[in-house]
Image (cartoon, rainbow, N blue to C red; front, side, top):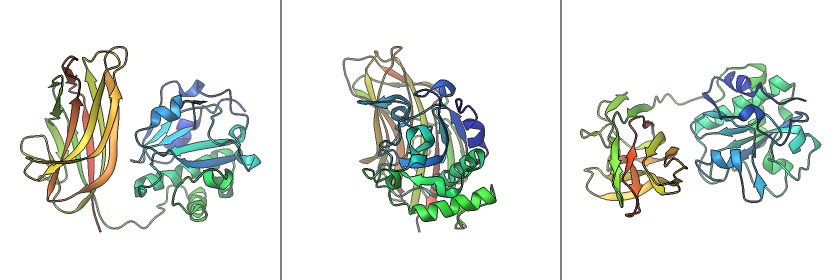
Amino acid sequence: MPWLTQLADVARKTGFPVTEVGGWKTRGHGPQPSVEGVVAHHTAGWADRHVVVNGRPGLGGPLSHFWLQHTGRIWVVAAGRCWHNAPSTSVHHRNGASIGIEAENDGRTPWPVVQIDAYHALCAELCREFGLPASRVRGHKEVNTQKPDPHSLDMSTFRAHVARLINNPGTPINEQEEDVPEVISLGAGEDQNVPAGGELAVRWHTEWTDDPNAHGKDGVAVLASGSRWCIVDGLVKVRGLPPGAEVDIAWSRYSRDGRTFKDDAWRLSARADVNGRVEENIGGQFALNTHNQLRLRVINPREDVATAVVEKVSMAKVSLFRRW
C-alpha cells in the first residue's frame, strides 16, 4: 500500500476542523504496508502534538497518524507507518497493519464531548475509506496488554457509535443537552512587551462574544456569569528571545476583582527556536465561576534575557459550558 496521502480528505468528511501538520504526506517509517484496523490511544499529556510528530527518547516519531486535540480539531501527522502499537496481540493492529489516533488527554481528565464525537466520527470515516467493520476499531488497551488507554472509555459502546456513523454518516451520536455555550473569541490586536524577569497578562483588543458581560473592561480578564466548565484554546506567538530561552504560558485564575492570583489552571513551558521565536497552542479544560476571573499570562522568568514581545496575531477562544 502506498503512502496514505488521502488521510486529510478522509478527516474532513467528519465535519470537524482539520489541520495538516507540515510534511505529513512524506512523514513515516516508510510507507504504510496495509490498513486492517484502527487503534485508539490517549497521549498521557497535554499540548503534546510535537511528541506524536517527533517522538520521544528511545522512540522516534511519528508515533501516530493523527493527533486529536481536546477541542475536537483533528491534526493529520503522518501518511506512512507509525510506531503506535508494539507489541500487538492482534495481527490486524500491528504498526504495519493499522492506523493510530493519539487523543490529547492526561489519562485522568474526563473527556470533552466534542473530542469524543470527533473520535467516533474519525474512526467511522477511516472504516468507510478502508472497508473496515467497526469491530476493527480497538483501544490500545485491547491489543496491547501493557497499555491502559484510552482511559475510561468502554470500547464496546465506542464501537457501537462508530458502527452507527458508518451506516449513517454525519448523524449526531449523543443526545446533547440543550445548552449553547458562551463563546468568546479574542485577538491581541497589537504587540505587547514581556519584560525580562517579569510577566504580562495579555490584553485583548478585539473580541466577539455571545455574552457582553463575559469580558473585563480592561481587556485582560474573561468573566463567567455563573458556574461554568471552560474549554479554552489559544495560539500565542512570542519573539525577541535568545535561542533556547524559555517562557511560560498559562491560563490563570484570579479573584473576581483581579487583585489576587489564585492558581494556574493550565501552564506550559516553551523554548525559543534558533530565531528566538515561540509559537505555541495552549488550551485545556477547567472550572470557572463568579468568584474568579481568567487571564492568559506570558511569563519571562530570566532576568538576564531580553524583553520578549507577544505578537499582535496571538488569539484565543474560550467556550463556557454550564456545569450541571
